[in-house]
Length: 351
Image (cartoon, rainbow, N blue to C red; front, side, top):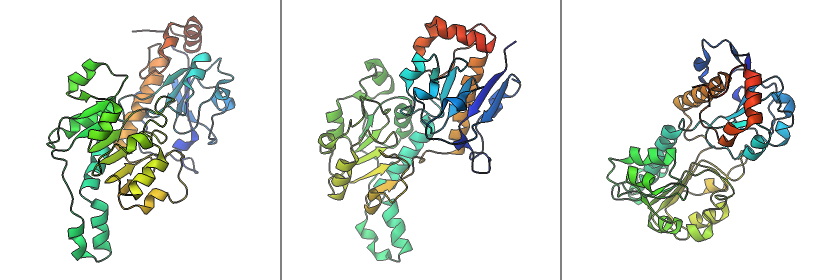
């Protein structure tokens, strides 16, 4: 029989009165498994403290950072589950050094982010916001100044052809676009061929694409990946969409380019510094649509992320290798395997 396994959630899953902010966090996965219990942190801090992890074997994390200091007392702690697919707030190397699995909910956000990206592509090309303002301000006769364009015969360029990028390509099939292109040096050629996407250099993608859609993680290799040199390669009628992470795109260079009319427009869901608590300078531009890092948030997305995160914790409690592990080298680490067995009471790596 497995030992009791406690999972804690960071406090930002709940409002000031302690009520869940989201309708479904996937707890149904844990039904019938009484050895797993779920609780929450008492307070929300930007960085998780080691005290907050005491007494739990796993934590599901929304926004707080996980650092070396967080894991200072991790002898009885097994796993950090990041609620989502971005993990720039988690020090994965520190997790590995301290014998803690770092996990993401790979696959759970693919569909909603891809759908949101298409919504933004249509909103930008069909001048949705300007046309909305015309009616709100009684300027009906100005509509001829805001002719739109279709996705038909346009080229999509994907930066980072992971699950989200691949889902985006599939969902756009049927819009009559030209064959998509992508830049992803981590992906083998066979993966491009399997979904009918041509692999190109970043510079070629920036020069050729009508839509540059960013779906890569933020790390040391991608920070500042799209700077002034790359942005200035874009066509004047092209659009840039970022639903990944701020910091991948040079915001100063992008702002200057948009303000000068160097590209047709942009859609931004993420920013170099978050949260954005004062009006964004991008809000002054008519050719930009913005969202507070939530354009893809849906009830279905949070349900699916929650189910994936809970399933990973449940698997860990039963000795099964969980989904979405970032530091898979721990799978063959004797010290980690011994800790896993000691804390769960089951033999690790059950089928």
